[in-house]
Image 1 (cartoon, rainbow, N blue to C red):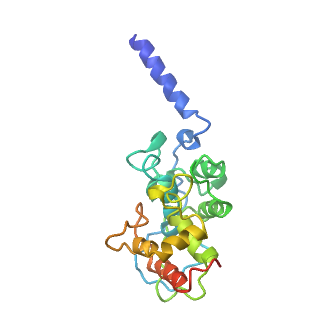
Image 2: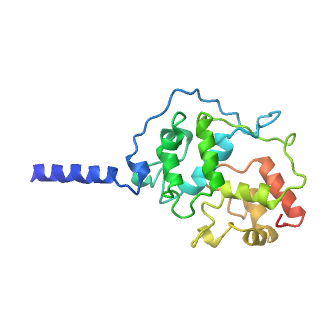
Image 3: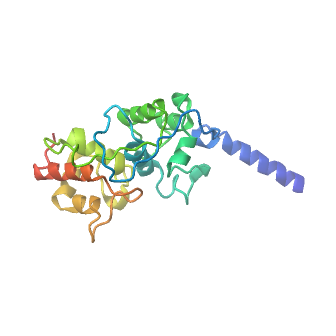
Length: 237
């Protein structure tokens, strides 16, 4: 009986590893150490400019993945569905590749629609993840300051919605959005902008549920841009 039990355990383990619907579960976790990791700048560090051609992990990739994939029941530290955790650079980097980005388990899971199952990524988000890996999959950061933050002529389509897509719609979209709050369209966002809940949440104001909840508060630049958009009339521009 002990031998039979051992055989069944091995069989189940191998079966899980070869589940074709869960690429992250069976891909080997190999950390690519061929590329140096950039040191992370402290939040609020003054920088002269952020390169528009660089994908920064701390400001783009981390919030994009944590808001879409690392929530409760999925790939957070407690649930770690299929043994996968995607809450920080070390874990995310383990499923990424700087030398073979398109062959990485993380990229294939996103491109093939396995992850996130609730709201599949759009082409821009997939391209951003790929570009980050192609640039070395670095743990880099660039905090936009008041000096280089553009709050003039902020548009919903080019500024506000991409920010919400990165930080918020992983939870607040789909048929069953978190807390019943859907932020996946201009009409929906306008409602929460008008009643003050959007600014209250992203500012982490007392009495409002802080958003995003899985990562740190939005940067001062993003908050200023959303505030400017609201002040200009929450246009669908």
